[in-house]
Image: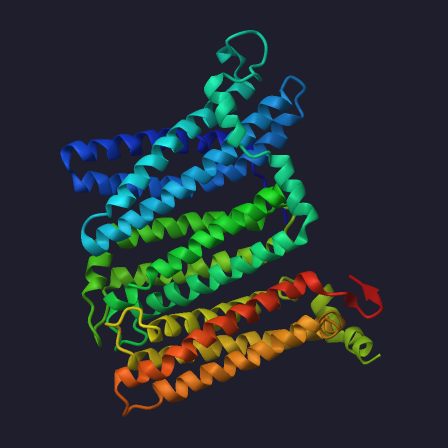
Length: 326
Length: 166
């Protein structure tokens, strides 16, 4: 079984989302301060969370895109490495911003507005992320667009700000080597990945089952209070999963099961949006002991269970589908 | 020799060597699904017993023990098939026995929680919580250790197959 993915094409398609998306979300977030507009602030937090999700395939596709163009003699390896380091730093800042945005959205739900610390943290991380994403976009553009270079030479030297940021950018090769040579790092990360999985399955599985009509004597609102534990599990698994990917990018990039798993995760994001941004959630919150949830909520719960099963299955089959993508 | 006989049996060889998608990785998948159902549901019940979401009534949570035990059975049965596939790998690794002991302990604690907290329909919710609190804390520690021991088996074995080091 073999699949065809043009990673360069996919990367080009996706890489504008975090660069432009974070700028739009930060602008909305800042405007929300002046107008004291909670709806606008909530919308910007939703966009941050969505972009953090979409940044995962953007980042992962970069390794395949790199392999596609690195064979071409006119492409500078130094420029590729600089872009890779910039992408790694901006990726983690984006994920932290997304995680903080989800915490803020939860606080909106619980207390009708986010805590002050959360607003400040989102502001700080999102502004830094915009800068880092801009640098990632620039360094990526430099690889294949000599028309934007200031001189005829490839711009491998840094400006003042670039040199400072570069100090904090990880060296991808060093990280990969560390992971390859220390099986205990991988073992520890995989162990955490399992614990995160158990949290997600235990909490989201129970909520989905109740919405579908199991254990009907439980009111749904208090059961929904456990969701932050599942989100903590998701956070653990995104972090550990991506660290393991960075450790062995070549092994994972050409694995069809990994890409299908990422697709299922993106669909889960859409499913969560369908739940929280429509009447499905507000209806479910008022379901008392012995009552049935609405059909729309049941459909979301059923698709959530199917998609999580797909994520777990595809994750387990990653090891048996290496080199299944051309 | 006993380990060699198991490894050379038709079933053991099939699980290891088949190209069917229902071989080793499928069994491992079932093992994971079972484990996450059992441990995940234990976490949900344990958090409630530790005082989280106090407005969630305790009694109806009893239904989730069906999910928990279904997961445990799936994990146990699939575990036997995994052991049949690689008996030398598991049985020559001391960590495997640690894992089995922890699982036994975890099951015992879960049974205790079910009995003293959920099967006693006469006790008040406060009494049930008081009985369940320390059991829930112990269950967290034991399941965390059992999952970690199980996961580390893939990295700590000395012999993969009879007469073959890993």
